[in-house]
Image 1 (cartoon, rainbow, N blue to C red):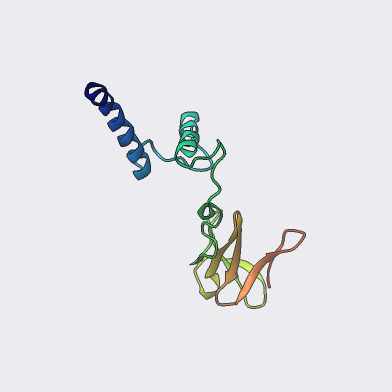
Image 2 (cartoon, rainbow, N blue to C red):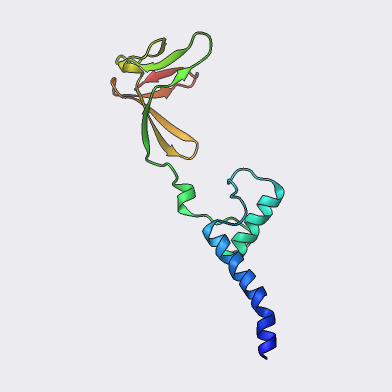
Length: 139
């Protein structure tokens, strides 16, 4: 009996070390949700089945869905085509480009949902919108 327990000890220790490594992130490299090689995706599937106790589908956690929602950043949007322009939102609702930074080129970018952002002119206090013909205007 003692001999059987001592023979299983290395296996149990290895399994415990692997489990702790998975929990602390020391295991294989992380995989982004959108890409990864075949072995990485297989590893992620195995991990989700063993640790999360679910089937092969990915866990739908709220941090993945709500990531960056509500975060607002104030930036200047720059287009490097030709001689370059900063996007500006003018107080009369016109959207244009200017070579040098100015008070109207400061834009607040905010995530609305995955793949959707809102653009807000800080000085003009107007949102950037697009009509059915693809023309931008401030509203």
